[in-house]
Image (cartoon, rainbow, N blue to C red; front, side, top):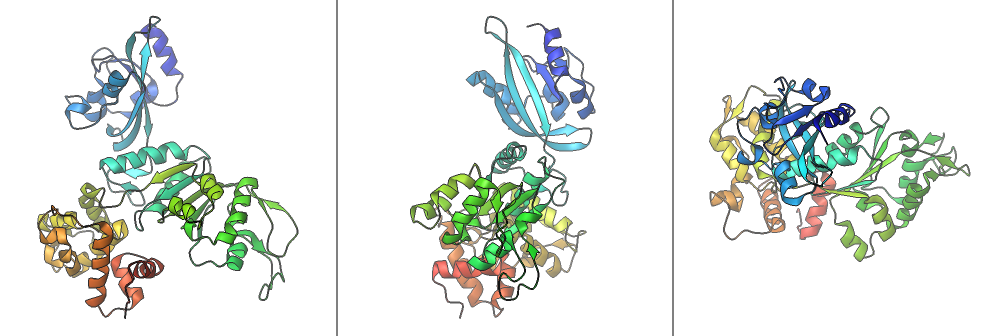
Length: 433
């Protein structure tokens, strides 16, 4: 296959594409790629890392995973998420690298196909996903791939890891982005309320139904419906939910008329649904219907290298954006285990920004309970690490003992919802009194 044929092939691709040899030299490029980067591509001279990374060495020499090296080692296509220096500044890119062979099956070079990830930001844009750790980059890749499909996505992760933000990213990057994004809070809904909220009701369907009302499934027609904490759906309602997902049809409460709705289904849960299936608390057929594309959201403890970046992001978008953290304060934050995850970090940053008398936020401005964390007391990670559950339990006990706040205010200080707060107390057998 000669270069002219390759050039004709990549010219027909809408996404930015280059063809490179094993020396990283760009041998062919389409116009979409040229439009992305401010550096001029000179065929036969420019190397891919010079254009995309403003670097003088390949990605794998700078601590990143190089997809071409993976292709060389495996003989198969490879993909990775990198930060590229584009005409619009630094941007996350989903990179697909494909080996190209000649008629004899010999690899002659590689196609590099790029896709901009619009739902994440490297410059702290509001309402965008923020981070740079390996677990975070893996999450971006999963979200970007799932967004373009109509497949059902199940988001699983601890409370406060940002499941709703990910769900919105999945919707905003889909073909349904101009249609409604409807959130259904499953926690606390009894059977009657669940049906009425989902499917609507006719006038006179029950006491107090003085007029007909459309349900949330009606509102989601053409768009996306997001079931938050789907593990809390009552077992006797799960069969009705399964039928809705399989047929996209339903009846309003008190009505005999069959209705239908075209929607994409997303769900989230902090519970282990497979364990619930084993215990008979969640239908197995429903689980496999909703978990078409399961995505694990890493805890903040798993992506500890993102804490500094996230703390600066929350401070920038707080009521005191002119303030900044001292190096010592950031060090203390990076060592804390954050059982409440990103939501807790946001609350900690807001509290510290209010408590700081100077523009520079010192470690003494941080909430005192942070310093009770075992790994901070040791100055680093303990060699005898406690489980996250044990740390969380101790943190809850200390917070309750050292505070006279109401359950609602204490939950808010901890960066969790009231229902989540009570669930954790029940889980660990803690009496708030």
